[in-house]
Length: 401
Image 1 (spheres, rainbow, N blue to C red):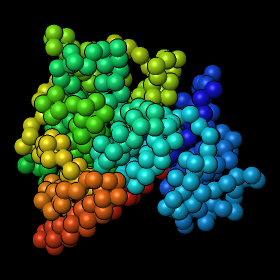
Image 2 (image 1 turned 60 degrees about the vertical axis):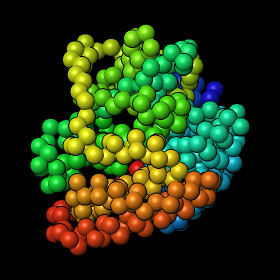
Image 3 (image 1 turned 45 degrees about the vertical axis):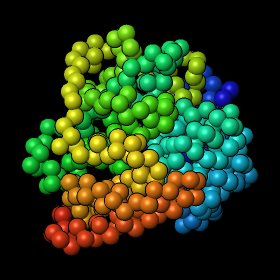
């Protein structure tokens, strides 16, 4: 029986992980659950899976949950709740589905314990990839990616000599705006940008899919996970989302990982690798696999994509700054404060003001804070320079857990 700690249990990754736990003979048990504010769902999950170690990082939600706790249940609450839960639980694998830079301290604590980290919180590696990879090596911990693309690369490289690798072809769907005329992008509404054609994901990732910022962050993540140079990473648009990524070797052979769009696949792999026990994920489907298209992304249409490569080459705190600015920009777009194309201006303004120091996780967190301040200032300037965008504000993009 594999014991798992589930961070972000009420979000997209968390609920799909629990679906795998429910499967007959899954071999999985849950030792701890954590969420941000969705306390009622958290308590329902705790009851279903018999979990007595819980965490809520929102103090108000914790106060609401406290009177309803089952006997013997311990609730960790507040900003340090995730770290406290990590040390209170006995687990084999932590599934980390918390969104944003706020998930970085939890990644650090899991790796310090020498545990397997099934990582869906890509921001941890984007912000502090060098530090986390070194920490994992020193503690004997494993970082297993849960992003479908990075999971695909990991599986394509299994048993291969890395010296024979020529490049990784990182696929993306092109998002919900792939066919929208470029002249119309500045008038795109949050509702339109959130209609992903293939995947069901949280707001920030879906907006990032529309702008390809999510892919820019995945380029950085890929760089850290596999030690790849920018020249060894090529992004390819693949509208069907069947080929999750490909690896090309020096002899011209291309190995692809294929599957229907279902996040339970990479989650299942992260929980069980190197084994391959049965899962509920659907395999080959003639109708779904019958048409596979690929195209190159247009850097003019998707300017965010080039920033991922720029950050790898610049190093230092650049990726940290980019991630922080994007979190602010996405929320401002979802709130109707700025337009879709304005997000690029927020990214660039923050990067232009970065200081460069990445000597420790503490300095990176400080850079994150400064970048958010700069991004908010840019958002304010943009909102004052043009009419507010119509439409009701949508829920916060971090409210997935």
